[in-house]
Length: 619
Ligand code: HEM
Ligand SMILES: *[C@@H]1O[C@H](CO)[C@@H](O)[C@H](O)[C@H]1NC(C)=O
Ligand SMILES: *[C@@H]1O[C@H](CO)[C@@H](O)[C@H](O)[C@H]1NC(C)=O
Image 1 (cartoon, helix red, strand yellow):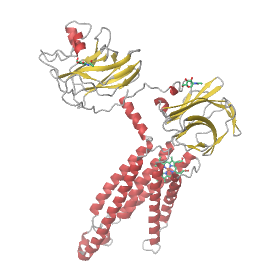
Image 2 (cartoon, helix red, strand yellow):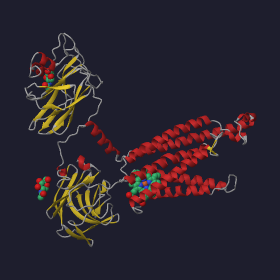
Image 3 (tube, rainbow, N blue to C red):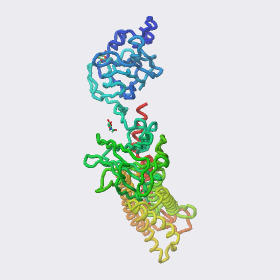
Image 4 (spheres, rainbow, N blue to C red):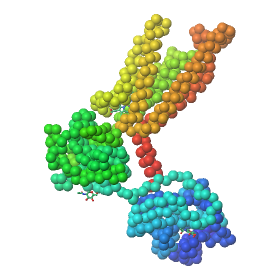
């Protein structure tokens, strides 16, 4: 029998033997190819069927944990209780086609050619009303005589259009000698069977706004507010997940805290309560709720999610101001936090987000979250300057005055030219980042540790170049004083910068994950170690240099013709090691700065990452 008639060339067989209904029922029933003088392998199959649940459908990937290709395959879906075929296959690639085990129904798939295949993907669609558990059963042929029959997928429960992949171990029906391999490609099973009703109608029948940005689309907001306008009635819903003790909505004239009418939904020992409060600046204080103007309509605490629905009069007077929901456009603020104070809410440590646009609440449409681009820019620039350029520039000034001395750059020693270059960069980026955060915040916002220590860093950094410009000549008596002051201010600024960085991790606006602490700590350890090694090397080098000058005075004559005293124009001993250390230091510092900047710019990095992996694993 020619090899062309490969295993399961069902379509071909069908045409040749004139079976218009597709594969012979025999193949559908036992999945066994009719290859002469062959029998199925009894070892554990090197192939796997990977299902990922979608809306009413399952995406299948037919692959191999070992990356092996296959020439032929057949796959079908059966109800595990009745053994009936279920559903239909769609979205096939060119190398696959439908087999109609039952006439007119797309119940199985097989290959169209004997090319080597890897990771074929297609969909299986559930019947509209079907409820039950199914399994995909398949056969894979590596070549004509090597094939595995009965390769089963994980079980999948289907409940009308909602689908769940059970990750319990696949039942083994074929005799297998080895333990199941683990499929290398990680698939994020997107279970959508528990749709949160809160999001139903968002941007269609009601205005929704939540944080983090884009969470309305993914239906997983940490905190979210919806406004439903029914005639003259204004209803608000809000909910927050996590360990939220409160979720609140503010009506504001701008995207920031300050002069806002706030309604809070609080969880007080398991009891939901509604309060009203006012933001004066960053301070939030409760006030009595105007009688009948704002009323709780519904509330719940379920699986760590607190939920409130309330009605608000279309016209209310709060703190002497009229809130006219019909005619005045408002910004919304949504906040949530983990703690309550004695008579109010504590810091919004879960969510704080304002809308960048204001609109009348009855106009349904998307709210655009206020951009935090400037905060990211502030963080990125500060990181670039204090993790990056400052630590390189200062290392050069401290340990490399006697290295690369036999040439100059624009009439200056290399160490000096580069020190100045890196410090000018540091200065410019720090001042820029400082101005940027003020543009973002509008005022001197708060007495947080980050803000105060950051201010100290910036001031110290700011005065450094002015001090340097006024420095006395080398050798002048006041020069020692300058050196000392320059060194001191530089180091204090660096230490303040580090403290500011550690406290930046704790700012919830920065959205940095807590584990950034470890990266910062690793940086500090690396920085200190390098300084220790170079200090040690410096001591050794000093001692040798003095010995050398005494014992081999003539050697210096060989240094490349320089007009200056020859000895001063030679690198101090061990310059090779020092240059090597600088090379390593430079690369590692750039890596630290790059990693931290990426985390800051893509913050919150964990969610960015999850969205990314979801996008590539779903379809
Ligand atoms: C050495 C590095 C840094 C310095 C010297 C510094 C300096 C400052 C200063 C002076 C302020 C005060 C603005 C004010 O409260 O009016 C501030 C605020 C802020 N910084 Fe930084 N910063 C640094 C790094 C970072 C990083 C890496 C981030 C991460 C994104 C960051 C995020 C913020 C945020 C979100 C605020 C506003 C805080 C608030 O709302 O009160 N900073 N920074
Ligand atoms: C899968 O197919 C093999 C071979 O036909 C069969 O022995 C096995 O019982 C099937 N598994 C299920 C769950 O139907
Ligand atoms: C409150 O919510 C529950 C569950 O969401 C709903 O069944 C009930 O009708 C709601 N009550 C009111 C008054 O809206």
